Picture 1 (cartoon, each protein chain N blue to C red):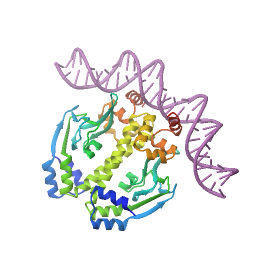
Picture 2: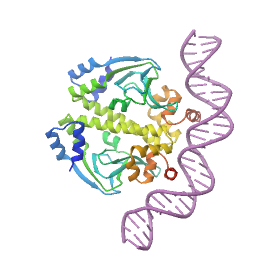
Picture 3: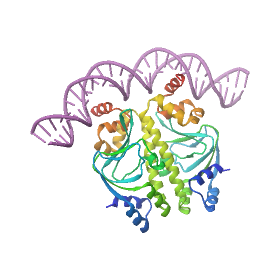
Picture 4: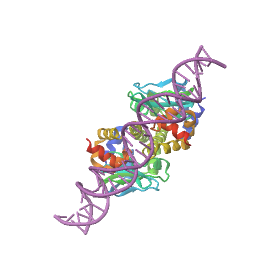
Length: 188
Length: 188
DNA sequence: CGTGGAAATTGATATAAATCAAATTCGCTT
DNA sequence: AAGCGAATTTGATTTATATCAATTTCCACG
């Protein structure tokens, strides 16, 4: 039932039977209904989750406007980065955009695994670098491109997001207003 | 002479004598004069460097305009992320903005260290997460703030950059034109 | 030192996108 | 299936910032 997660982890660095068994024993599955909150602003992001099915977004607020920081879907590993790594309260909230199933472990359990199974640091390092690269890529086009080109880039690189997420969240993710995105769409 | 680097690494995860000795033996120091190129667009970022002294910036081009992706200075570990992690040619160049001294090792040497000294994966993981958080933070204010507020944020969080880097590079880093940044400055 | 080219400033104008304001469509819930 | 609130679209206007165009200032180098 956690096949996808174990497939992912084994593809990064094959896991010993002991590590596999231990990880299985501490993983907790959780169903999150559409619009349900997984992490609320002001809380510490205490868990790291693997998305089995569904989609979520992470956002923060300016004035009363929600700005989406990312969308994550099947096969993604999700955290509110700063809050999780530093175990401090964060500005970000995480909410499911569809009915979602995740498997998670706590920060402390993860640290324990890093100590008990040092080879697991490889997976931690590789997955962190994956999301780091994604983050840099987003910066790249936010600084560089016009609204229309940012949308086209998203359409090319992550068509799933465009298909599944509401327009207003896509707009804030691209750093533009929903009116502008609506006009971009109708002009295509 | 590599004190700062070893201090940093030991603060993340104390290093064994064997690891310390091995790392010392493979580290290569390099002086880079102001305006000298450390990595050129189209090349594979083959090395990871620790900055002992000086400052560099990483940039890419659109049309003929250079866009700064980051500034790095003393105590930073630098790579062109995607090019280094995937060992593929990248769009980014890295150039010294001051006379600079770095200590570096190759991608392959780093992989060897991860295998020979698994505990070094901890340092890799922690440093990657550090720069990942920085990248997310940059995204945060690029999406959310106006030109003036982005500049103020930079001034608050990384005053060294503002003091040491040329205005035109700071402007592109903030995703604005140098004329706009110049006007923001004169209005303060 | 003095000078030539790069960097920064300043001004005038253009424009992409934001904002404000309805109107319309969509999609739940009963 | 109807109705209601949320999401999206459309329109009019404003605004922040880009762009184009000269100066002026700053340094690096002879």
